[in-house]
Image 1 (cartoon, rainbow, N blue to C red):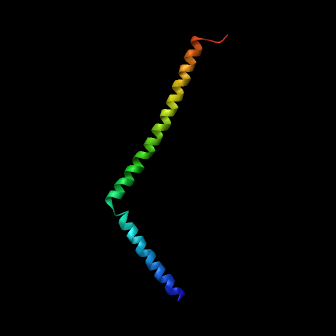
Image 2: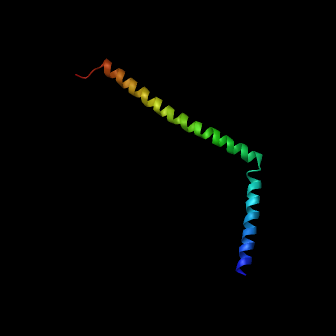
Image 3: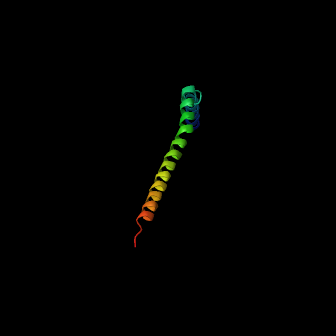
Length: 73
Protein backbone atom coordinates (compact mmCIF):
# COMPACT_ATOMS: atom_id res chain seq x y z
CA UNK A 1 0.00 0.00 0.00
CA UNK A 2 2.78 2.40 0.94
CA UNK A 3 4.72 1.54 -2.23
CA UNK A 4 1.66 2.20 -4.43
CA UNK A 5 1.23 5.64 -2.87
CA UNK A 6 4.87 6.51 -3.60
CA UNK A 7 4.49 5.24 -7.17
CA UNK A 8 1.33 7.31 -7.72
CA UNK A 9 2.98 10.33 -6.13
CA UNK A 10 6.08 10.04 -8.35
CA UNK A 11 3.95 9.60 -11.49
CA UNK A 12 1.97 12.67 -10.47
CA UNK A 13 5.20 14.61 -9.91
CA UNK A 14 6.58 13.60 -13.33
CA UNK A 15 3.35 14.63 -15.00
CA UNK A 16 3.44 17.96 -13.16
CA UNK A 17 7.10 18.47 -14.11
CA UNK A 18 6.40 17.79 -17.79
CA UNK A 19 3.44 20.16 -17.74
CA UNK A 20 5.55 22.84 -16.08
CA UNK A 21 8.33 22.38 -18.63
CA UNK A 22 5.85 22.61 -21.50
CA UNK A 23 4.41 25.82 -20.06
CA UNK A 24 7.78 27.49 -19.48
CA UNK A 25 10.88 26.17 -21.24
CA UNK A 26 9.09 25.19 -24.43
CA UNK A 27 7.14 28.46 -24.54
CA UNK A 28 8.86 30.96 -26.86
CA UNK A 29 7.16 33.98 -25.29
CA UNK A 30 8.37 32.97 -21.83
CA UNK A 31 11.91 32.41 -23.10
CA UNK A 32 11.88 35.80 -24.86
CA UNK A 33 10.73 37.52 -21.65
CA UNK A 34 13.32 35.66 -19.57
CA UNK A 35 16.18 36.55 -21.91
CA UNK A 36 15.01 40.17 -22.01
CA UNK A 37 14.94 40.41 -18.23
CA UNK A 38 18.33 38.72 -17.84
CA UNK A 39 19.81 41.02 -20.49
CA UNK A 40 18.42 44.40 -19.39
CA UNK A 41 18.08 44.27 -15.59
CA UNK A 42 21.84 44.08 -14.85
CA UNK A 43 22.42 46.95 -17.30
CA UNK A 44 19.83 49.09 -15.54
CA UNK A 45 21.36 48.32 -12.14
CA UNK A 46 24.90 49.17 -13.32
CA UNK A 47 23.63 52.37 -14.94
CA UNK A 48 21.98 53.52 -11.70
CA UNK A 49 25.13 52.76 -9.68
CA UNK A 50 27.27 54.73 -12.14
CA UNK A 51 24.84 57.66 -12.07
CA UNK A 52 25.07 57.82 -8.27
CA UNK A 53 28.88 57.67 -8.41
CA UNK A 54 29.00 60.39 -11.07
CA UNK A 55 26.67 62.62 -9.02
CA UNK A 56 28.91 62.22 -5.94
CA UNK A 57 32.01 63.03 -8.02
CA UNK A 58 30.31 66.12 -9.41
CA UNK A 59 29.32 67.33 -5.93
CA UNK A 60 32.87 66.76 -4.65
CA UNK A 61 34.36 68.62 -7.60
CA UNK A 62 32.00 71.54 -7.02
CA UNK A 63 32.81 71.59 -3.32
CA UNK A 64 36.55 71.62 -4.10
CA UNK A 65 36.11 74.46 -6.60
CA UNK A 66 34.13 76.52 -4.08
CA UNK A 67 36.77 75.79 -1.43
CA UNK A 68 39.49 77.13 -3.75
CA UNK A 69 37.49 80.26 -4.53
CA UNK A 70 36.56 80.99 -0.93
CA UNK A 71 39.26 79.52 1.28
CA UNK A 72 38.68 79.40 5.02
CA UNK A 73 41.34 81.27 6.96
